[in-house]
Image 1 (cartoon, one colour):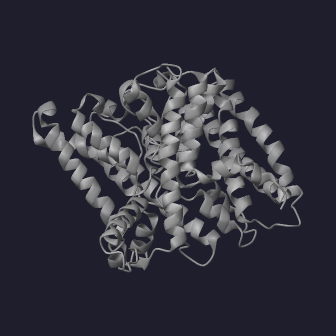
Image 2: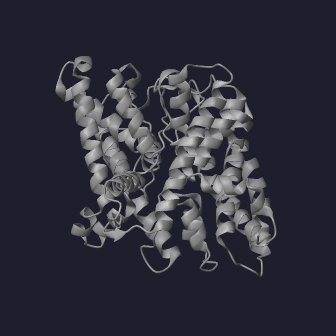
Image 3: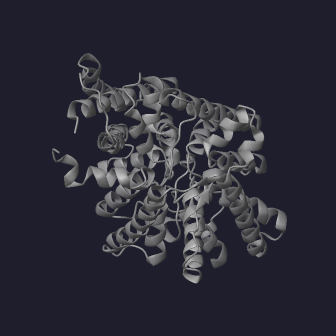
Amino acid sequence: MNYKMLLNVIGKILLVEAVLMCLPLIIGFIYGEDTYLGFVIPIACLAAIGLPAFIFPPKDKTIYAREGFVIVAFAWLLMSLAGALPFVITKAIPSYVDAFFETVSGFTTTGASVVADVEIMPKSLLFWRSFTHWVGGMGVLVLVLAILPDYNAGVMHIFRAESPGPTVGKLVSKIKFTARILYGIYILLTVVEMIFLVCGKMPFFDAVVLSFGTAGTGGFSITNNSIAYYDSTYLEMVIAVFMFLFGINFNFFYLILTGNVLGAFKIEEVRTYFIIVVIATLAIAVNIISVYGNFGQALRYAFFQVSSVSTTTGYATTDFNLWPSFSKTILLALMMIGACAGSTGGGLKVARLIILLKSAFAGVKKMARPRTVTSLRFEGETVSDSVLGTVKTFFILFIGWIIISTLLISIEGYGDIETNLSATIACFNNIGPGLGLVGPMGNYGGYSDFSKIILSINMLAGRLEIFPVMILFSPSTWKRH
């Protein structure tokens, strides 16, 4: 383990967080809020820790796979621990465990909240709360790789450890340029959404923070009724469409921008994602016609919630907790599947679902015809045994993690099986609202500190896709080899 390099990278990441905190500090001054100490103190502490990383760079800058996973896990944990301080110092969220839960929910783009009345929170804190979505959506370390110099080829290990999905490839020859292209697309889509929302007469501040939440597929709102507060079909559809777009693999947008439109629409995962959203929307719309009186209204609410849940954003325009069981079951399934690999969404990912289904069908075919030689293909290429093995391992850990976490938070006796299972799924898949007591009109404030810590770990493990968190806490990681 190259400890000096580990400390150097983490120090620079914390310094970047200090710079990011300057934005909500400025927002506080603009709105005349007395919240400056809540940001000045953490900024000073983070700067003091991060500056030595620039002053004393290590001689050996090698980053291996193990360092990559540990750096990613540590960075997200420490940024969340520091990011919680503004809420505690300003007493907007007095409990540090609650503030940590809220901040982890922000950076991991989950959107699960313990705040009962968000509308009384100062705008600077509302901005910081939603800004963590935007930073975490594309990835904390992807941002660092985009703005800081390359170390060596080892940064690919960091990029792979943080990027969601079964495979991660470079768009161009250098990782730094890939990171910049990704952030360029990310910023462009965010700004375009802001413009559309402002054109729909949404207040500018609201348009900015809600675009942060949409881009990061996070879901923190600044009103107690989420998007339903605006009661505007136009605004709902703008947000729904952009949620859907941010759930698409960013390679799709890169191909579009480079003129390869045909190649973009040939991406198997994207086509499957489109089909899932369309079928789920129509099925729910038909099922909830009796709730809203006509198919048009039913389709409106169905598309928004399918787009929100399938991309693991978590915004709401209605209390889907009151929908028929069939519709709620579809939403629960969408929570598990999630969005595309290489997007800002969470969940199992459509790519893994495709690979697992193809593997299952190939297995059945092999049982019927043992001598048949089959090769599993995805996106026009043969899936290697190592990739297939990693996908299967992830799926086993994915199911096991959900079962164990549900049992742990059920110990205290809060809520029923629907509440606790959906809370675990919603946090682990970075969705936010679940069913029952943690539905779109509820929150996670009723859970004990123990359960909130378990759910916070779930959010981190889900966003980082399990492996970095497990490697961080594995004793063998810290042994000298």
